Image (tube, rainbow over all chains, first blue to last red; front, side):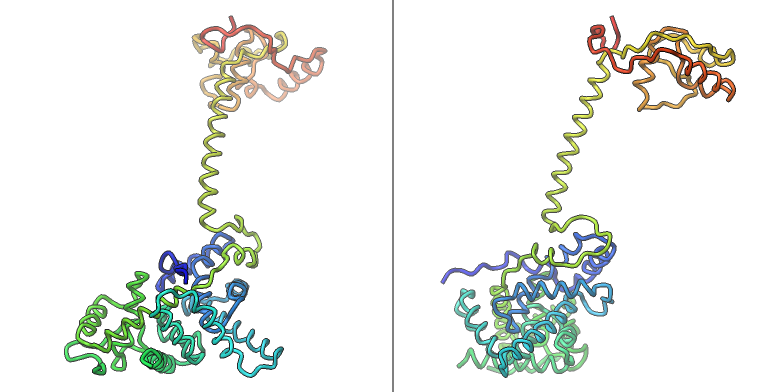
Length: 192
Length: 245
């Protein structure tokens, strides 16, 4: 197996960079198109990871692009109650849910997300180099969709329970429960 | 493995941004993802005090040590499978706002564009400087022979000009006239005309309306048109440059 291409650095936009995002949004609203490119560059990778974690397979790029298009169409309505990244995750999650529903109607399948998750695990396993990382990743992909979503946002993206609750459409308490259940399930998988 | 019993005596309660709420329900395990994320991206999800308190707890808690390792591994695994994204394609698909400035160029390319612009500006300034120097070394334009116009007596020899010392043929504008860089060449050329020719510069401004009308009438009656083009085969340049031999 070849060594996977790791990101050269940590996220372009770390959590806590809300002020930078707000400034870029203001510049874009004022007509500066370069601000849009900067915003995309800051958040595209995180959105791609999240899309993969919730079961998007081959068309991650398309989902990320649609997320940005939707976001920029309504960027004037972004009030900054949450961080921009949380808002983008929320839009992307709705988008993925809509796509799953459409796919389910077309294919008359009962539970597309779980089926996608299994396929995603197979497809992405090859990208993980180390055995331990591969096993952890495999265990994550076998979580329930909600657990996987919460665990990914909490661990991979470093979001707070409050932010996760907004994205997942749940409460902070429920997000915390999902997280601890996910950690327990992963440990059990690794110990098995 | 001993289960984590939470914050021990004297460890206090964490109040980091990762917990569901600041307060009694927050456990050390809640903050482990924040500890890892802060270390990775330099964020400040945990305060310095919370980080110190959490690290002290982890040092004595085997379960939290194991879970910290799990969180680190899971984060690395999550980052390792980051699907590639085409930033340029995404940006090109974004809606444009009315009156957008700039182009759909990512910031990195934007920086290169500035460098290119700087080079072009430098070259342009250099070329302009050469052109100006060449103009200064070019012999004065030969215009039509002096035309003696009836100049009103009031404007014939204004005191300001009359008092100027004739130290240089290049000095032509009265002292009270502000310098005009763009017209400096034309003024210099006009100054080479013999005394008594058509005076240009501030003197016209001294004429009254009636005098101007009379002057314009005289010009209309002229039957000769001065040459507008310089004589390229004109006199050679002197060593001093700019003056006819």
